[in-house]
Amino acid sequence: MTFDFNIHPDSVQLTDDASQHPWIFARAFNSGDVAAVEQVYEPDGVLVAAPGQAVTGAARVAANQRFLDVGLPIDVRPRHVYLADDIALLIVDWTIDGQGADGQHVHLEGTATDVARRGPDGCWRYVIDNPFGTARL
Image (cartoon, rainbow, N blue to C red):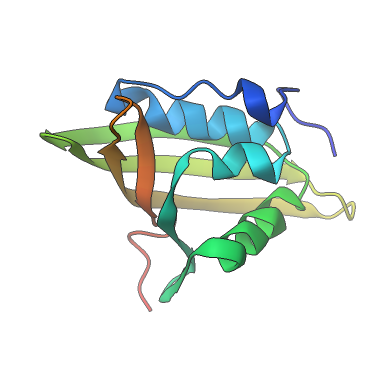
């Protein structure tokens, strides 16, 4: 598995700027380390692993691992960030594209509709990560 970044999970630097959170997620994802990805979520944060399938806890870890197993980096393009005190709505276009770990071409894309919350430490984490936010069931 080859990614753009080679970071250790302990080195994920969360942000105090909600508009930067998608980039923090991409950096963690592109490390290829599911533990790094987990740091960008609140403990009870939800990942919508597929349209209509919300998971948390160990199921969230497993779902993120399946995305990582594709073996390609994610490209994020934040479109909108809306803030209300310590809550942020993030609309983010994303793409995973290239030759996957199995040698087959992979193209995944979506427009995420994500909710993040500023924690007591001032850093943002996902409460809801909905990568297929605009998909129909």
